[in-house]
Image (tube, rainbow, N blue to C red):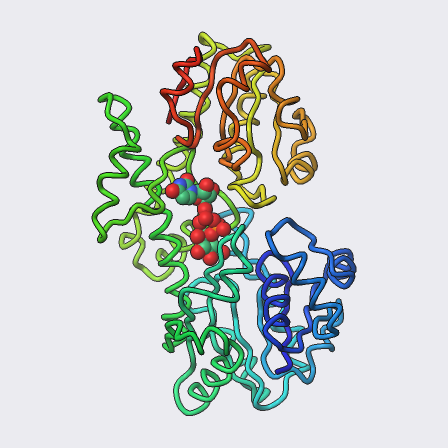
Length: 433
Ligand code: UGA
């Protein structure tokens, strides 16, 4: 099938490459010329496991093309909208500028019978606002939210755990759902749950899922705050409650909390939208979820200060990690960098290492010191802080090896990822979250 994908960021570029890999003819469209040029050469413009291979194969097969020209969308049967919906500069609501621009740009090239599938995360009610403009052309609008996780984006796109399609009423909606079944044929053949609903529900499913995940993380971080003053162990607590299948162990990792381009802005946009709808109190708890999350960053900074005897001034502090999570070079709202900036502000000599995100971090915060090599970054550190649990830090860095690199004997485990006993028995002072 011929498909167009408008917006080639983390979501759109992966979607375009994944759709080509399952046999579709895909054109990815983005306003960023440099990004389009890189993608056209089969180069991934950001770090995402398996994306490079998929892009190369797609471009070489001739089934995957990228352009800045919206006119290239003409003739495609399904048009996916995957542009960003960042937090507004002056508030919590989602900024829909890019979604509106994508729709305005696309409308002249739509034909009767086309399907426009919104994938961007939007406030509930957005599809209802966009539909008249799109459907005046004879095309149909559906909302098909995306649940991919960065670091697993290729896998999550080709083999998702569910597909959700929100359609308009009547036969047109049914027809559009059938077209999307054809698009996602390998997942449909595997009997992946394929949920057809109305557009408002589909929009809401996405924000509800992210709100739930954020709440789960802040719940365990709230328990960590209580554990800390009682001498209890939050990791053992998470393991114990996680055995209850109704609770589940995943997303109960206490630490410096969540960041990235999705969970933080999505819970804020959800609160803002609920307030517009006169239902602010229904999701008032999300303000608390946000507040708990931000407190964790303060707590990490306090731990470093305490660990270094009350001041970080002119102390060498090495942070392991810059990305908001492992297997990603994304530094949007990264808790790791937030902690780094605050320590720097307090006069520490901060060194940061990361396997993938250094370039991005350097561009945003050139005042910090970046060292690509992990061991080089650890030399002379007065304190080591684990902020992003990449394998090369959490799994591979042993206290014995760290002892050969620095005489500082202080670690702050911002992700509760290390074995505290192992560090302590090797002579280190270990602080967990
Ligand atoms: C999140 C959702 O997990 C995806 O399902 C969703 O599609 C995506 O947002 C989106 O809306 O596009 P992502 O932002 O890639 O995906 O990252 P997550 O894996 O959800 O992690 C988010 C943050 O939570 C990270 O900073 C991570 O370190 C933190 N986290 C995660 C914890 O602090 N503790 C945990 O137990 C798990």
